[in-house]
Length: 249
Image 1 (tube, rainbow, N blue to C red):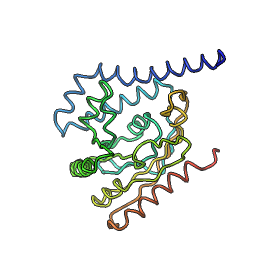
Image 2: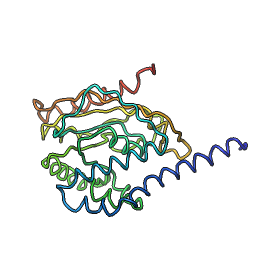
Image 3: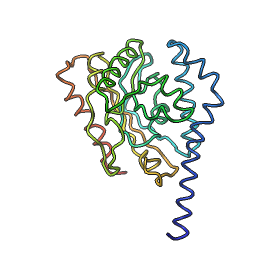
Image 4: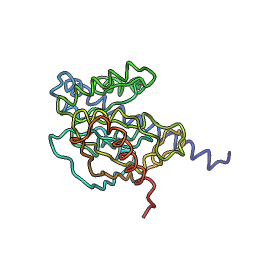
């Protein structure tokens, strides 16, 4: 390994360590306020506002510059099912930055093990053990409860980050679409163009720069029945994949 390559690896490692510092320090500083904000369910919108502040600090602290192109604006007080492609831990922060409507993440339980961050993650998100069928049923029940409270839900429907980093977009699980149809809430698709390039799960792959987001038109579900969930799944998948595979202008 030549010196330039070695130096590059060192700088990327330090850059990734800086990410975890940015994740942790604001939570420590805001810990008393964050703790109070999760004591009652009706205070969740305040917690969500703090989470958006936390996400903004991380994105800009890392030199990630969101560039958002919208086909629609979300209505205040409306519940949505937010879905997007999933390639990076930064997807969480970018979703929070883009979206003002308070929502609850459905995410993998492994993230609850991250020190400090995990304390609030497991108390405010819906955790899923993808290897446990009973866990998936509990996720559905808890998501229903949050939607009944007037909140939105965010699910990355690929069901995790694909092991094959060359894969453009993995197949979607049906859970998000089943919930959306059952509760008559619209699907709100987004495409994250640059997150894999900016901060992928490959350790020696990270760099500052723009993070393009396409906020697509919503997909209504009021006239759909449960038999339409696969069609809704495939339609959403096609919207995001077509955006990802468009030539860069």
